[in-house]
Image (cartoon, rainbow, N blue to C red; front, side, top):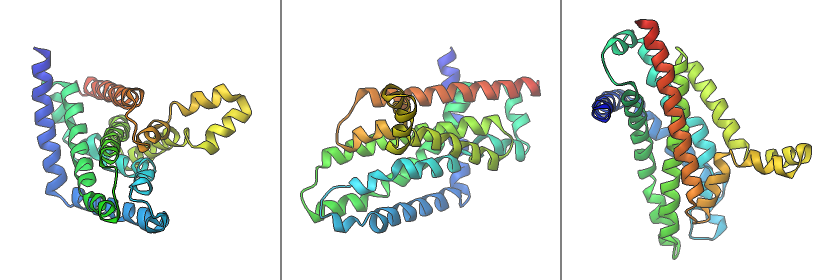
Length: 252
């Protein structure tokens, strides 16, 4: 059955990639730098303690902007490195299920990103020490942040399958992620509204990760936002599979 082949390919790809992440300093360095930069942005740049509020608003505010840089960096090697290491031809010549491979590789990167988010739990404890925090709203925002991280990773994985250079995959991935983030920035959507009308400004903002994550930051779980992030991730997985299928056709 097709689903069994997909599941088998998914498990094999996840185990292979997760081993590759943690057998080298890559995952540890990624997590350490991510936590350091997020900490600087939250505590120093946003002056967290000056807000006098027991919530993680300044912490979550930076997630889309930091994911825009960090997630393509985490995903850039998923397919491009297969080419550099010479394993791409061998991997693609095997009778493996391509959607399973694409999903498994993405899930491995998503696991590392999830671990990085889990390790921010001391900050959650800190706001509870500072005062009565809305833990339900914080948990919801964490959940949507993780879903959003998957969308950013899916961009990086799809681009990595399109190019043979990990560096180029990172640059293109960041560029695409920036466009999809900045589209919801009031400065950008406002400029579009002034130029093409309010409807165009709203339409552009609806394609932004920033717009859909802001709802979660207010403690509201919006189905439209979840559908947007999950649908976008599914679209990138489909593109990823298509790019790899074209590469396999070249190998064959």
